[in-house]
Amino acid sequence: MATRIVYDAAGSPPDAASVDLLARLQLAARRAGAELRLRHASDDLLAVIVFAGLAEVLRVEPQRQVEEREERGPCREERELPDQPALELENL
Image 1 (tube, rainbow, N blue to C red):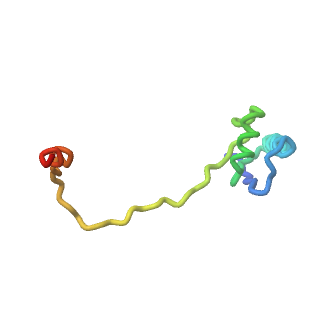
Image 2 (image 1 turned 30 degrees about the vertical axis):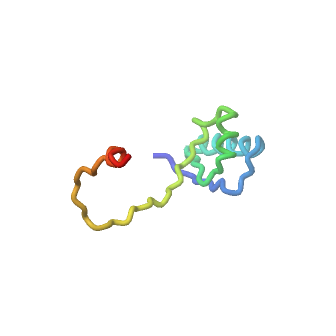
Image 3 (image 1 turned 90 degrees about the vertical axis):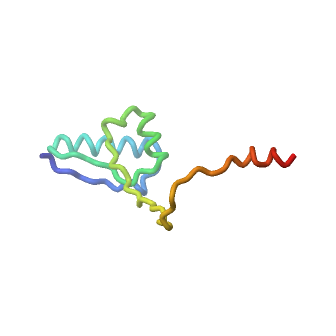
């Protein structure tokens, strides 16, 4: 198993120079038998990486987001509700 090097790209500007640097780091890591992974890359930086055609070469670790939970309310029985529009038409 190759050694994994994690690069925090949060402060990297979304430009060609950053993508060039990341590509060179990935090449050096592979030559050393390691694997470079990006973390916290901005959407703009990812767009530049895709535009450069390096999306498969420069792998980005997915950002883990906190899952939102719905608050549990009281348990309710399922039942059919009356058809409101039909009830309103009867009063016309």
